[in-house]
Length: 321
Image 1: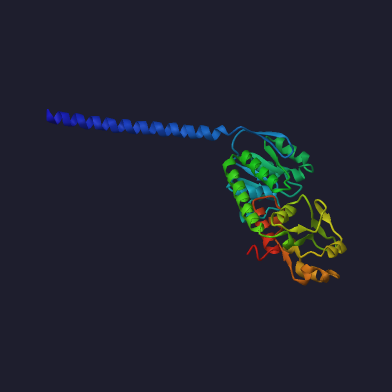
Image 2: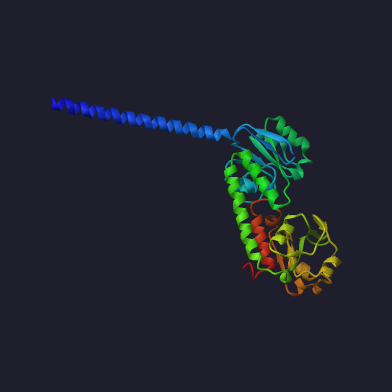
């Protein structure tokens, strides 16, 4: 009898274990279903793009094509490098972008894009008006097209990141990316706060060398960067403008920043220092001519903060060591 109860107890324990296992599996299955439901709940998503058009994306994209380097940098920063199957001919960062299939430049190859069978194509408002027909052909092929806004300020860049995050199901990552940028900018502003009004430096930014000198004025990234570090732009006009040499000489900037050193045969410092009349400028006399990476100060992506830091070190090396 005692043996019988032992056997019975053992059987009950086995049944209990099996029941427990069965319950665990059920719970796990239930949790998995909940997770799946949660993930799928963010799609379909309706986005108002950079052209104020509503785009409905039914499911999380598995294959993405980017038609603008800034879009590509944002995509990689959001951890979507594997999903990116095509990029523009101008994409050079990060280095993995160079390994992606090229789909053309301003005149992108519609057939090539369609052949990659992407779920979504990320275009850009700065060039969309020149490629209306091509973008429509892509839409007609059943591919979603999101035209990302043409950002001219940091706030606009944050909107671009948010838009791409919504379109790709990475809103959480986009929010973190924006928060990180804001935190870094805040730290730069905090250092710049120590610069008094009397110590502010006058800056001339040259984005294109002779024979046609071009600079940057109000309502541009570089103006916002100068404002952030408490420096004065010698240019008061808006946008990217051609400038007269005599005007620069008369303004007598303390610092000259160039952005074309990477693709210029002659050093920007040599070019500027050898110009007739420029030897009178304080920046030339004090050898305060600095070349910065063009992409970090003009490309509307995550590296703009790096651009601010580079400009800060060029203008106030003692403050931003």
